[in-house]
Amino acid sequence: MTETTVPRGGRTKLGPVNGDLTIGPRATVDPDGKLVVTGRITCRDSAEITGPVDAGSFEVDAGDVVVRGDLTVREDVRARDASLRVEGALAGRRVDVDRGLSVRGPVKADEIEVGGWLQGQGPLTATRVSVGGKLELSGLLTAGSVEAGGSVEVAEVAIDSLEVGGTARVKGGAVHRSIEVGGRISVEGPFTFDGLEVGGSVELHGSSRGGEIEVGGKLVADGDLTFRTLEIGGIGEIRGTATGDRVEIGGRFDVGSALTLTGGLEVGGTVKVGGVLTSGDGEIGGRLEAQRAVFSGAVEIGGEIRTEAGLKGKRIRLRKRSRAYGPLVGELVELEERSRAEDIYGREVALGRRTEARRIVGATVRLGDGVVAEQIEYVEALDTARDLRCPRSPVKIASLPPFPL
Image (cartoon, rainbow, N blue to C red; front, side, top):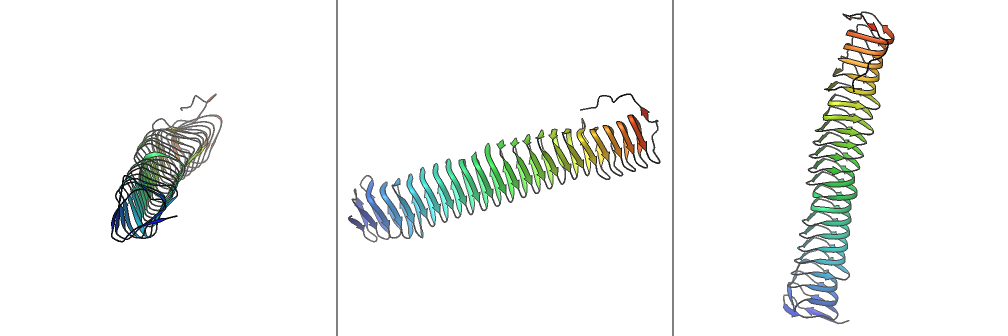
């Protein structure tokens, strides 16, 4: 195969090349229309090609190379200790650039690996994209796996997986499998994904649908959020509706509208729901506030309950010194020592020592020492300890009346 050479610092106009082309340091090639090379193009250092290129393969040994047009390569693009700027489209089988890659037009390749930064203005399509530093793309990103050691700032995505060491900013789209971000991720529009694992914070500015979500710090969602599981070490804030299976929050959890869970709710601090809360089991370390709360299983509150329409659960337990504002309705309602409630309805009601309630209605009622209640109604049995204070005598009724909720 023949070889054509452009000397160091020279400027040469070239037509089609049958064979290989070697471009010397700081040389310029002016294509006669399009530079078509049947073999390999090798740039020995910084160089410039002032028009479109079509070659078998493209290599850069060092420096900075500019192609002022499309770069179409049938095999690989390789830039060792170099950067590459393409002012048109880029197409190749495998693109491997050590320093940085900038492309103005569409990019299409099987694999893209860049040691430093990758910047693109058009759509990018690849099976795998790996960037050591920053990935910045203003067009649609379509890929299998996408990895960046530093940060990612992209428009709409249609990818299988995303892994970022630092921060990520996405306009919207879909990640079909997993997202892993070491620091922070912000999504500007509607977004669908499967797994999301973030060490720091998450911002979702459109309605989103996901699978398993795990956040070390804080999650804020401006719209609705649908998920399988949601685990947050610190704070969760969903300004629309929240729908999923299970929620586990270390600190505070706020939902602007309804919260609907098929599994359980576990929050170490406070829960505030603007609409109706529906869940399986529940364990709240601090305060629960909702328009109405319905649990199909057991619920345990460590601090305070505030509802407008009431709280219903199969089993309700208020821990020591807890407070409940709004009716409590359950198969079993228990108040531990020094707790206070308003109206209590249950098949079985058990109040510990020095607890207080306004009205108690139950099939069986068990009261500890020093209980204070304004009204007590029971069907089957009433068991009282010492010092019951009730201005009206307890009343045995024939059957339980309809309970609220």
